[in-house]
Structure formats: C-alpha cells, structure tokens
Length: 100
Length: 166
Image (cartoon, rainbow over all chains, first blue to last red; front, side, top):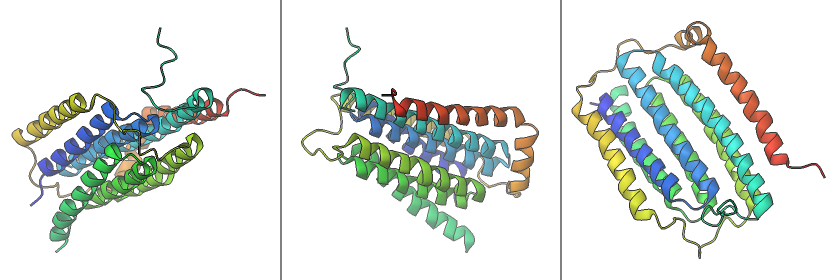
C-alpha cells in the first residue's frame, strides 16, 4: 500500500534532480526549466501531505507554488531573451560581461 | 481495484517522472529538455489524480504544459542553436553538483523515511468547494497578492522582452 513516505521520497528525488540541473546546466533556459522541476516537486509534496493529513491547506499552497512558478517562468524567459539580444548567447559560462 | 490502479500508477508515473527528469537535466538538445518538462508535468499531474486532487492536476496541465512549456519552446526558438552536440550540456561543476543533489535527496528522503508519517489517506478527500472557500476567506490576502504578482510578472515580461524602442 502507498503511504505518504512513497510520495515524499519521489518528490525528494525530483527535487534533487532539479537542484543538480540548476547547479550544472550551462544553458540559461535549461536552468530555468530545472527550477520549474524543483517547483513541481514541491507542489507534489504539498499535495501528498494534504491528501494524507486530510488538510486542504496543502492544496492551497500547491496552487500558489504553481502560480509563482508561472510568473517566474514568464519573467525568467523574458530575461533570457533580453540577454540573448544583447550578447547573442545564453551560455551561462560565457556570460561574463559583469565580471571585473 | 481503484487502489491497485493507484499503486501501479504511482510506480509507473514515478518512473516516467524520474526518467524524464533525468532527460531534462542531462540532455544536450534543449528542445528535448523542454519536452521532458512537459512529460514530467503530465506524470506529476497523473500522480495528483491518484491523490484525489483533480483540480490541481488540471491546473498543473494547463499552467505547466500549456504555458511554461510553450514559453520554453518560444525561448529556445528565439535564442537559436538549441542543438549543439559539440558543446557539453553541463559545466565543470558536474561532480560537485551531483554530490550536492544526492546529499540533499538523501537528506529529504531520509527524513521522510525515518519520521512516523500517516500511512493511510484521510477518509475525506479535499473537495473543490473547500478549496474555493478557503481561497476566498482564510487565504484571500495571499490570493489577491498573487494576482497582483501575476500582473506585475506579465507587464514585466513584456517590458523586458520587448527591449528598447527604436
């Protein structure tokens, strides 16, 4: 039978994958997608807790997480496009204009 | 029967989610990474159906697959060169990042495994009515704030992406 632990472990794995992506990806778009993966794991975590504890607050929090993920994606990808227009590149290791 | 379906669905969708999550963080082809996010989102939406959160599953499909993935595809298209097999997908922090992510995962999973947690789902699933009522009573302030945030993000995204007038 499934328990809350199953869902928490799964979302921990997804969260870890997202963190790995954030640390290692060179492309700015891929980095933003990894952040989305982290948010997804958190939303799953909240939903599972809500289901097993019988508390609606978890689902409310998941809704807010999804909303903020959407806002973050919109602004983040707009920034990536803006940076690309200025530098013709979205590789984070080569974007060193601000480096002294 | 339904319970069995939920259990089988959990393992199946969990496998799909982790596998496409790996594609997302490792793929050299950016378009594959974006599409992997769509698959992860659909898998998590399926898991949420198993958690009796139909509304959230629907919102997830609409927002992630319908909006974030489409935005991602647009960004990939506008920045070009999405397929560069000669360029490594990861930077030199691969080992360090792997250790960090693994340690974090083990920490989170360890806490989940060691804590005595609820074994049985609660009898009463959270209804959409409850959610709506909570959003407009107890959580009305965050609800309004997040709508202002969305508006600001919308305007900000347009202003940033449009660039200078010339």
